[in-house]
Length: 167
Image 1 (cartoon, one colour):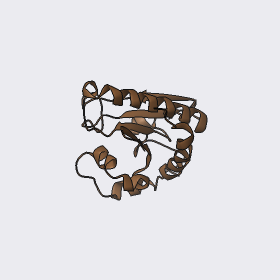
Image 2 (image 1 turned 120 degrees about the vertical axis):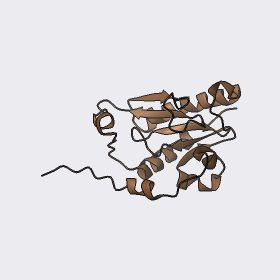
Image 3 (image 1 turned 180 degrees about the horizontal axis):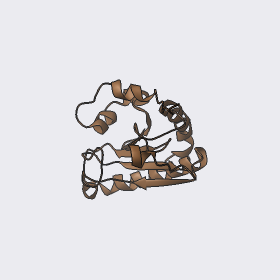
Image 4 (image 1 turned 90 degrees about the horizontal axis):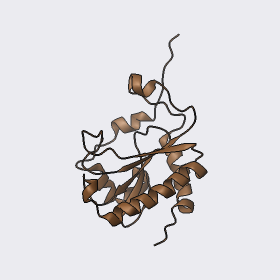
């Protein structure tokens, strides 16, 4: 008997309508669709959104509203704000979501490995002891034990507790 990997939730991603232009600018300008687009948080500088194709369950991104592909040209105030949100996000993932560790990263430009190179974004990837497997490197496949909707709802419930900003 042959083993079969079954991921019916991926069907929604394959069939969904494609966004024209910058997907992050679309999310930024469509606040009314936050739940549909899996936005966890937004403020005047940035928004936080679940990664639609996560490396691990709970993988989300911090994205400035300002469209730029250049970290060096980003307003320093926005960069500092993204860093403050990253600290809060790490705390949320560790304390609230139970991650043992977190990878933070930005892939800048096509050559840097960015999937969406035209608009910078900061990844927060929760990690657990023993969570690595061969699937991503061998078959370009990721295996998750829970679906995006459940994880989105769980993290969204934690946001008010961890993302209280002091100006």
